[in-house]
Structure formats: structure tokens, C-alpha cells
Amino acid sequence: MSVDPLILKVAILILVAALALVVIGILFRLVKGFRSGKGQLPYAAQKQLNTPAEQAFFAAVDRAVEGRAMIACKVRIADVLQVSFRKRNNQDQRWWRFFRLISSKHVDLVICESRGGRFLAAIELDDRSHNRSDRKRRDRFVDQAFASAGLPLLRFAASGSYDVREIQQRLEPHLSTPGKDH
Image 1: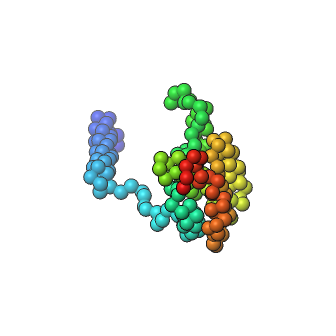
Image 2: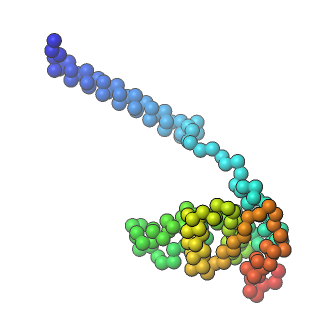
């Protein structure tokens, strides 16, 4: 039994058209759903910004600065440091290479002037994960990046409790702004 070529072509055309309508219908529902706010993107809220250890450390640093500075948590390094040479154009691979090295890394805390927001120091809380070789490599790079930028990066070992006076002593040289009394 042979099938008429014209009927075969029409059947294939109908099948392709039906498939195209199904795809268009699915896309339309997705776009309409996202525009109306009913569509779901694959995100869920984190339970909290800081781990309990980070929150305990933040509280100790907050007591140590005694309201003399602003403290920001989990700050992207690219929001603190910048590539020091100008980007020639949007395809400047050298600039992008250095930017990518800092664009997805964060520091635990950044201490800023309360007025003006000038960066005073950055802080890393080093837990056991910082003993891994990949973290050691990352930490060396971050240390070098902050040193190159001339911005202090202080490291504190994670622990069950924190001595506020010790934190004050380590932060004090960075909290004092030349020519201003606190």
C-alpha cells in the first residue's frame, strides 16, 4: 500500500502546525504568567543572611565599634574593590578577567564610616572551611587584592565566643579617622 505524496505532505504540515501551536501556547502562558506575577521562578528566600556563628561574631563587632562605624554583612568584593585600570571597551578581556576574579567573592563584614560610607576595613571570619586547600588559595588571593588596594583586611578565627575588647583593639587603628575626634 502506497501513500499519496500529497496526503503525506499535508499530514506532516498539520502535525508541524499542531506542534507549533502547542509550543506557542506554552510560551504564551509562561510569559503571561510571569508578567502578571503569577509565574514562578525557581527561587526561594534564604532563612537568614548569616549563619549563627556569623551572627554571634557580627554582634561582637557591633559592640566593639560602639556605634562609631557602620557594619555591612556579606559584601561582594567587587562592591568594595575595583579594577584599577580603565576598561577600554565592553570587550576588554584584560579588565573583565580581573573583574571576574572579584565579582563572585564576598567578605563577611565591611566596616565603613557612618557618614559618607568610606571603607575603613574588611573582615573575614575564618571557620574550619578555610583550612581546605581551595579556600587557602582563595584567601591568599583576597588578601593580595585588599593589600593591593590599600584597604585593611582583618581575619578572625571563628569560635564559640568573642572577646569584644580584643576586637576593639584590632579595629581601633582603622576606626580612627585622621583629624576627627570620636
